[in-house]
Image 1 (tube, chains in turn yellow, brown, cyan, green):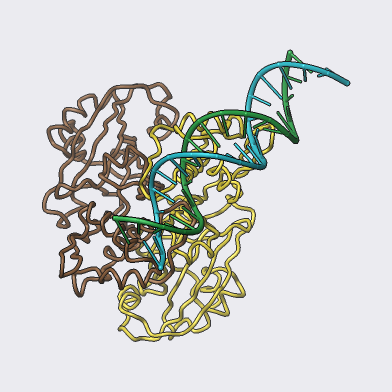
Image 2: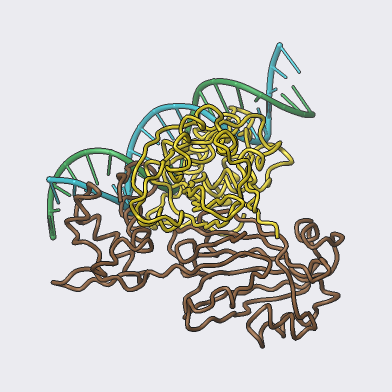
Length: 243
Length: 243
DNA sequence: ATCAATTTGTGCGTATGTATA
DNA sequence: ATATACATACGCACAAATTGA
């Protein structure tokens, strides 16, 4: 874990250190012992006071990533990073596969509205066309992984909110509404700092990073059936693209 | 730009605000005027003192993203976000296409070494096999976009460093070495906070985000020819996957 | 059972950075 | 520019828990 933390940058040292340790845990750097190195070792490594390391570890403990035991050390509780394959057949639940014991999809809010320019462009509709909006959060083993806003052409998928609430899955909801198969046409990926809404929806701490995908699905005839903006907790996921 | 900035989070208010304004500029929120709103307007919007907004704008001015003019306002200098298509035919230079007038690839360092477990796994070689390592930075219109470490099987591509230095392009270097075509087989995408090395290589400010890709290219027979770990300045790029 | 070494937990004083008014 | 409040970071000291000799 080379590279020093930096002062006077607007990001507190304890946060920089927490981010680095979180990353190291995800990368499996401490797999041999299952523990984080002692506080003093980390303090020397990062060139800071032990108190500063403690602040960082406290933040990670708060996230449930580590657990400190007096006299023993700081144990690693979790190190998973879910992998999302992105392909023509991109689906949340089957993509997760055996990486989680249980996945759930919760419907937070929904409504019918008129497509704004962005939604209309992606769904290839005229601006103002009626669309169904779904706000959902997906969890794996109880842990929030992503929050999404999806839009569907209202003319075709008016029953979407009910279908999703019942099935907890876009794929199964589509099936209920008579669409047995669909294709991921385009995916756009960016990254940004978590906003206030992300913090509560994804149970993140401020300063965390979100990976943002804007994706469009079509039916087998190439007609757009869904546009969604999904925000993933960056330190819980990675994407893979296989060509 | 909804959502308030938060105190006591380890990220200074001026930095949170700078990040939000940078994001808003990228998203085109101020395209009508080409200017950032007045400092007092922003101060009210974020619920902070005007001084705090000034700190944020000073940081953005330092990055060259905005320029403050007394009596007029704060002008937006740059707002581009380069788009990287990821597909079988993923190539940096042709992918950039007309988005930049000039692209360069600079060779920072290179060497011959033995493949560690990660490199060996990706290149499908036995650990310890000789590989060529290239450290490169790619720039578009003089602005650093990504820094990459690439590994190539040494037996086949011993001339890689020279070829890259001459051609400033992986594609052209491969061509010089007798490989006229190659395929992007796998791409893995994650995001993390910028490390010290990123700050200098990509001219970032601390707290910035990097998008990290781990990618493997093969020749037309499916034999791995390159494994690379590339770190992109997250606020300058986006990825798109077309299926 | 005891002891020493290691490691986390706690307290206090001080200096500097951040933000407001 | 000044004053005030709070957050961040450091340095030192000592207490409490765990481990292994």
